[in-house]
Amino acid sequence: MIIINTPYINLPAGVSSHYRGLKAYFSSNVVYNQCVTLEYLKSRFGIEGLLLKAVRFVALVFDIVKFVLKLAMYRNVHVLLNPSFGPNAIKREMIFANIAKCMHARYSIFIHGWTKSYYEEVVNGQKKSSNAFYEADSYFVLANQFVKRLHNLGVKGNVFVTTTKVPDSMIANFKLKKKEKVERILYLARVEKEKGIFETIETFKLIHKKYPKIKFDVVGSGSALEGAKVAAEGLGGCITFYGALMGEDIVKAYERGDIYILLSYHEGMPTSVLEAMAFGLPIITRPVGGVVDFFECGKMGYMEDSLEPGVFAEKCDKLICDINSLNEISEYNNRYASTHFLASNVAAFLESKLR
Image (tube, rainbow, N blue to C red):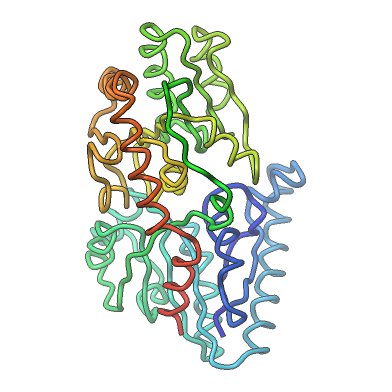
């Protein structure tokens, strides 16, 4: 039996979204231990400060009790833990790792993100990670560059590179159509500074000067949302902030788009890029995370190691001016994503490595 320790899967982003999308494709030998997060408590109850910390502690105890009961219920258990490599996430997930060890269950670790400063402190010996982190059966990461990081940390177990996913059902009814012109450029991600939202808006402004009829859609919520709205005031009615969307509303956002842009400073494997490709959108992005491992510049869109809005506006301009090239990229991305990123394939890979 495989127990996957995950945040509540009804949250809109990150690890929650990943396992929400995979749930339907795992066999009956996989169960979830869904845990409360600070984000869940804030969004559900709107609490802050000391009350938030107190409720979070009680919730952690409850999560541990659920976990112990699941371990006691099943035989031959393999636990999959899902932290980011940061001090708080590692400390929390290693509680579950140590419990698994005490109850003679195997465990593996899936690193979904990295806190660079913490990683460097551990590598340089300034800080020490939990011993349990180094005793896992195996490890999963989202890019080849992260395999090297684990080896730098002294990890000895098997390391597997996997990917995030596109739910099969998400594109089940999608029919790719040739485009006659570019009408909308889409940003769909958390609205945070490190996601490149402000560089994206400046890119939009440059495009708007030359193509005033093109619309810009920003889908997502986050701490930089209000600042992004202020930064976009010069675009007037040409930009729409939709907030966080779920389900069929996300599908419609992708279907409306003609080009997808994501200028993140760092990533694991951005699910939104894979989803945009599945909907046939050419990609404008930066060389971050797992995207580097597969991205074919020119065939899938454009990848530039820059944060200058003018660089990305120029790449968008190339697609706007050459609709034939845009349609060729669209067909290629749809075909590539459907072959490589479907949730059914990702779930099967994970389950096969954890058996």
